[in-house]
Image (cartoon, rainbow, N blue to C red):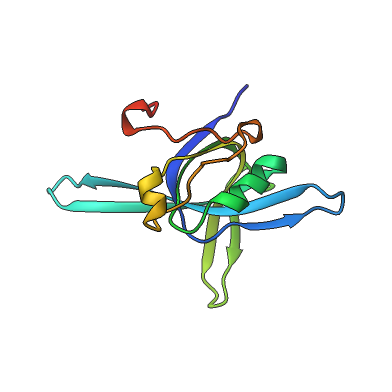
Length: 145
């Protein structure tokens, strides 16, 4: 059996890095994906889904260093289910039931162009170490879907 998840989206906030008691870095990012479609009656709809992503080790350090809120990324990884095999469910401050999809990243690719990053639209990968699992940005024509 095998599970693999591929997300393309933008960061909803700046990355947050911490260290485990053993000294392993782990960076948390929030990624929003969206899709636009037309309903059966012809109305345009947009749907946004948020994912909480954990990036471990050197790759997590690189993500924390180079990405900012609004950066476009491609994340490959696996879902982290709750004890029932579904999304994590909790109650917010107002008492509303909430759920989140949590992902353990195996690869994070920076998708912003250098021009977008320079204009504040995200981060650049210039000088980012390739051994950390972060690759050069892909053009829209190179995306695998």
